[in-house]
Length: 311
Ligand code: A3D
Image (tube, rainbow, N blue to C red; front, side, top):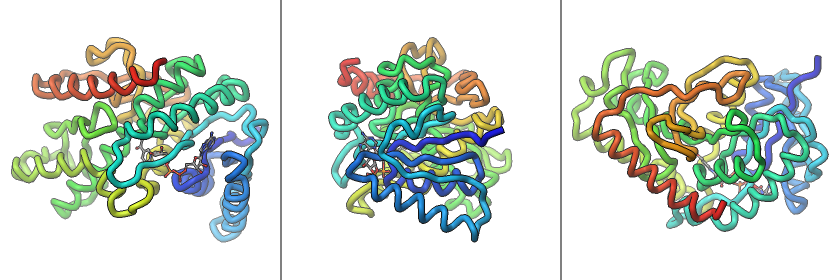
């Protein structure tokens, strides 16, 4: 039995970390694909990772390439192709360039591996995953966007920092679009099963929610040139692992809603079951009136960007 094949489309900051994590978790053999101009970079990253192998001991082959034929019959794709934000930019400012790139990527993936499971990371996320879905013609189970996992993880990290308690015991979810309108569901956040609303004063929780909404921008400002890459890579690897090992993890992801949460025809962050069937199910639950209002607000923001794709 051969190992699964995981192709990373875009071998930049996130792509390089995806390759390292996929290899270290022995999820399968890895192909790092990038444009011809960046072929040397991805070939170099692949060689470097092969030379790390004797120390770490992972059994995975790693290839760097700019030849689409090398991704043929991949089981999983993770797409980071595109440009990241610079200080002062919104994710939406990336739409023009990244949409052109997504058109190229989606048609090539469709040709090389029509049965693959595809995780999109490129921004603006909710519009990019929609664009991939429309251009490829893939089924809704095959296509998902990584954002809610990261936004929820950021919220978890900030709650752990605030309480001084183990991040392992913090659970919470952030729904909606991957932008400033995202919706942290704070009333369901717990530390070891204890509601955070009993552990942290309301006004401080509001500050933590605000920091979560703008956490990506906080890092963009610090970097000065580029956006977060360690945590985004780890989140996408968790999603790929849940698919490859049929773990059926419940992860907030940008999935195509067809009536769930009264949303129809848009990819947006919702609690998603990922297993060997890809996106197997969206777990619905009752929202409060305030949460419904916030979700409608974030949906409007997603719709606006999606409409700008013209797809
Ligand atoms: P970066 O390090 O610039 O890597 C992007 C790579 O894509 C570069 O190596 C490019 O050469 C490559 N590329 C460009 N065009 C193509 C193409 N047609 N085919 C294949 N590869 C191509 O960026 P990064 O890794 O830091 O970020 C990648 C994307 O992820 C950006 O759009 C970010 O905004 C986005 N991002 C999303 C999140 C989410 O949570 C959704 C978080 C962080 C970054």
